[in-house]
Amino acid sequence: MTPRASELGIARCRVCGQIEDVSILTRCGRCGRRLALPHPLTSAERSLAWLITAILLYLPANLVPVMYVSGIGGGEESTIIGGILEFWRSGSFGIALLIFAASVAVPITKFVALGLLIAMTLRNSPAARAQRTRLYRFVEFIGYWSMLDVVVLALTCRLVRFDALAVAEPRPGIVYFCAVVLVTMISALSFDQRSIWLRRAAP
Amino acid sequence: MPSRELVFASALAGVICIALATASPVLTASFGGLKTEVNVLSAPSAFDADGFTMAAWVLALVSFAVPLVQVLALSWTLAFARAHRRAPGFYWLLPVLQSLRPWSMVEVFFLGTLVVMVKVGGWVSIVLGPGFWSLAGFSALLAAVHRFDSAALWEHLDTP
Image (cartoon, rainbow over the protein chains, first blue to last red):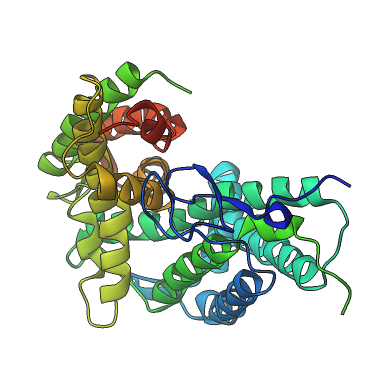
């Protein structure tokens, strides 16, 4: 079995990347930052707590309206899903798919992927470690595209302010949605990817 | 990884781009004789109502403040690195640069302007402002900036 860095008592400094001997040093010799060995549970548990928060926030983010548009013919509130359906019905399939990807597919993929990574680390699973590392990098990469809907809404509400003719206003759903994006990103960032590779002795 | 010279040039050009995208309109809309416009800095004020403050701050941070600090800090650090020196503040700027990376969302903002062009452009006439092109340029420049591993500078500039 190939030894792990932590089993040899060495660790890579998170700030400058220097490899140091943690059995004699507590701080990095080059940049002076504290050295940390991957902890088997802490990062996964912290990440799990953020993930649960994100999933809970995702409910109001989808149920509460995100936008109100008023015009001469009265006003109407819409949710994220409602907005996507409206694009689809009006024939803008590309936009509908793009917003669906950013607002629905990306968050749900992140929930499933992070849940899987956390569960496998917590259960000390030796399976598919290289693939799990790749999955983690993928989650990191797709994460911030979810912010697309917040940007689109802000731009729309700033532009569509034509007094009595047409006015678009934000509704509280977008605050929940914004929180979902932040909290899922924090969840992914607090997961220490080195913990995928840890081997723990059976209890 | 892109060369340090290329990243330095991109970061400097990025400072100019973000300045333009805040000083000039990104999109202008006109409808029924009324005209509205939006730029990178004014977009978050769409959330100026009570209860939306969090969304306003998040948007201002990820689309303006973080990218600005990122290109400024990188230009500063690389300007000194060209002379094989560690910039003043190197010790704390480098970790800051690393932790800002996931929170810089200029590309997302740019894609958002494209979506709005199609979305709102369907029933209102939309004109692209100079800010739009600076934003497009900035997104392209950040591709080089984001492929650069700033932690490698610790190694190249090992002795202060």
